[in-house]
View 1: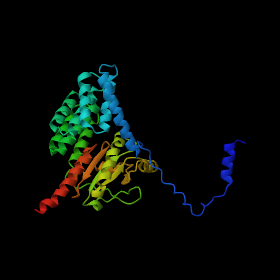
View 2: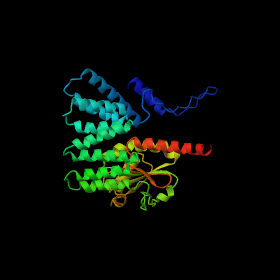
View 3: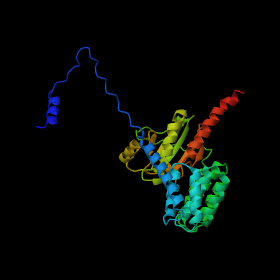
View 4: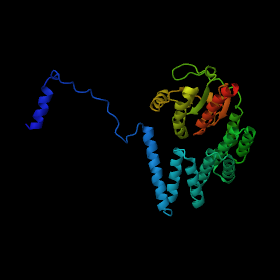
Length: 339
């Protein structure tokens, strides 16, 4: 038998022994700490990966400005910049694609992305102009028309121009002989009419079986989030929802999810895996969605502390910005009252 095997066997057979009298006991084992450079969470790791990949793409595009795959690299850079919410870089690369590859397959979508980056950077006038150009030049690309029109409609509503938004969607709905388009756009426009009104009662049970009564949330800011596990854009919105909930929940922000899923077990697994700790109702028969006029998801309705619908269609970092504004207004109100 080899020596190191004998030593190992002997150690296994010896009884546990106390340290000799007078000698200090060996220190208790401490909890292992993550080595330097190891990420604290999967989200942190993913963000770091995105940042490194975007930096590598930037370097590649500087050196290989005329490479055959440069258009593909630009599109990938745009996607990463969007994920990182770097609106200036989204605008920079979307602009570059449109200028250098005006006839490329991604050009229509890049024009839409460019408009969205303008909006998110605070250039409302530039975004409105760009979105109207997208709508006018989209030809038979109905999906692009719808996406641009709804983006512009939401932006107009947020700027206090609800009637203009309704008129825009009605015009777009009648602009193309596509079955169901007019009804779809009219349905979206109908959600704008809910702003300033009391939300429709839900009264349906959450996944724990307790009925959801929005009156219980009076005094809090509540986001009604219509979504589904099978909806790609809904999943893309999750990081924004999770971040907003973590940051503002202690300040009176709640989320009530209305899922259009059909399988409760699968829904509960998904919610647990993604750590979505807010209440959820599975609206498998679309009853709540129909009451709110929801025709596509994700769809959101922000209910203010006064119990009335304050905004619709908040997506991306616009939700966080709106919540930050609400918190600032709340903080300023007592100060004004005290003067």
